[in-house]
Length: 374
Image (cartoon, rainbow, N blue to C red; front, side):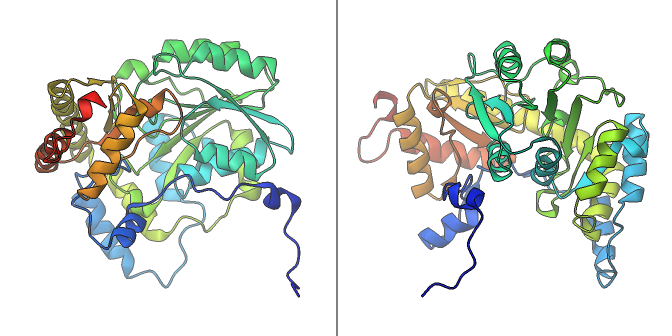
């Protein structure tokens, strides 16, 4: 006899799926350690020495709760962006912040629009809070801004979610194009702009911050360029009214002390950030050479990863599988036509050299399997 209280109808209706399989799970499954971990867009270039020292010191204070307001970090961010602290909220990474936005703006049955194959955590939150998802295909591996705007207007969407620069393609739109999209949206529709990779993007990609626009929320993270993925910390920029609404429901002690001090210290080390960005730029160039050498094309990238277009989803899947068998972790998008690509994080020069050797060996393996002709 099952005496368990019933799950909600919403939870019962959700699929038993996981958006990501993490590297640790892959290692436990194979019983071997990965040689290269290039599938999660983590930074291979470490963290700022300032952040490392600040976080070590913070360990001594772990018996105390963290600042629920993230006051010092928000003060520094407000100064950098030229906005007030009331325009900022800190969360445990962009995934947490996405959930906060969806919970605030989506009621059961209301519509959210996103690209088909874009970062899936947004989809998980929309379904988890009872919203309806509608997808717009990519257009030549770019987010179709016109299609997204028109679909949002037609369906009276409450949120349009856009990642720029994009994940998983790496492509990006200019700030002028984004401004046109904003002007196209109805007053009832929010643009949720995920800018996890904005530090790697050219200046023309960066939309000027307008803290008084209630229909745009910007999401930023310390996981990528700053290398603090394991600390789980990011922030949202929005109107004061929106931030005040978030304060009603957010988990106030959800961002730990070590993450807060590490993020703050990172902001005081612009030289380290510039070094990481420069190293990533060189890595993108190296991967482009490698891809073309093997007869593949590469999508333009403004991120810390590249998407190599293999020209065939079966070929891409075979390459990802072959690399994993050689203990190299990369990912591929699941939605067509993006599933013709394999997505590879920019590693250090040593990691890139190791990857190139394994990649070449795989494409013409000892078994005589030439993946160029699958």
